[in-house]
Length: 87
Image 1 (cartoon, one colour):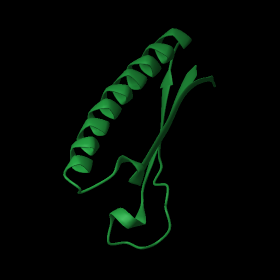
Image 2 (cartoon, rainbow, N blue to C red):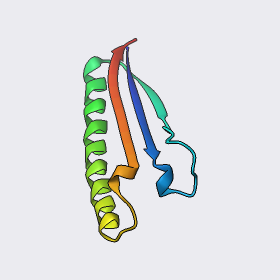
Image 3 (cartoon, rainbow, N blue to C red):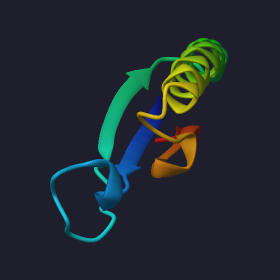
Image 4 (cartoon, rainbow, N blue to C red):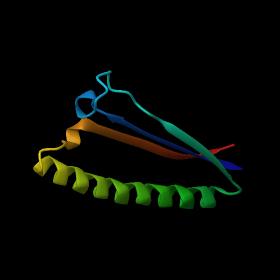
């Protein structure tokens, strides 16, 4: 058995919101079991491709907001990690 571990987190600058607290990571952690390493690696590759596409779209949207003076991409931190591990 193999376990896919997917961790996604983001943080928004307090300056970009009404919340003046410190930067906070808001993580999501998911686990999924696979019967083979190949299936786990295939799922990992699909997740990573999807995250790259989403990141490109997000950066484009943030750049549009920056040009409009409404936001700055530096106000958001996005991080993720996807791993396949033997059980």
